[in-house]
Length: 321
Image (cartoon, rainbow, N blue to C red):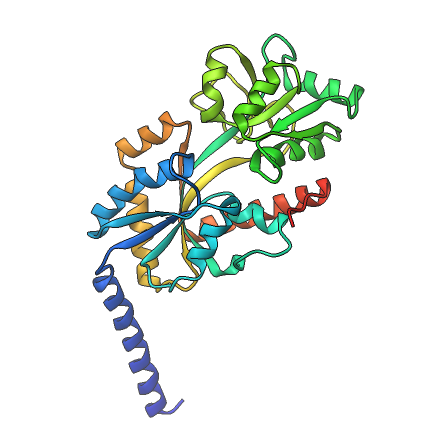
């Protein structure tokens, strides 16, 4: 390489570094929009409203929550995917980002248009049955194997994480249990109490009241670690179902192509926010466990999650379009 070429390369590297530094120092200079792909009041929206004011303090700019519900989270994801990758539009990320590609032949966005920033927490699902009946996961599996197709399970609708959790259990245990979708998890629990179905998976926070009241029995949680909210309830892995790991996770993502300095600043800010005592305690009150992962680790996690749901969707022959 000639001296002129070396000089030109050195200048280019210095300019690139200066540009990155400039982005870091300048951003953000205006309010940031946080797209939440669900209506107000649910877990993902609650977590967004918990995190947003603390992240705003860290970044020195207002964060405006923009609820864009519809199509199981796909409307909001598409809204974020179409935005400019400048750090001023962020997305509250959750399981539909890894589930939808397995269920829909076509989406209003391409999965590669959205890139993770940081994972913040995970909420286990819980396997529940009517109190006074089946007493363990092993008993449930034994009964299902003896009565193939005669047992039923409820879900909050086709293609949801609760539906897919049950299908993952069926594929992992070689059992045949009939799916009955309901309009929401509450209706599914009512069906359990009425004896219309034998079991269901539910998000832990929404099932906790019925569990504590003794109306339903929690057989196992779906994460690989026990929940602090139900310390005496085993995981499905402990109950003999290998490699079972499902959660309602949440974090932040953005349109692919964020400037590296902006991504780094967001990662650092979110890691700090996620460790605040008032944030961790608020998460735990809602049944969530803080679980910070940076963008690279979150990408690995999402890749594994997407591959799992591809396998489950193929096993159960589930398509939504």
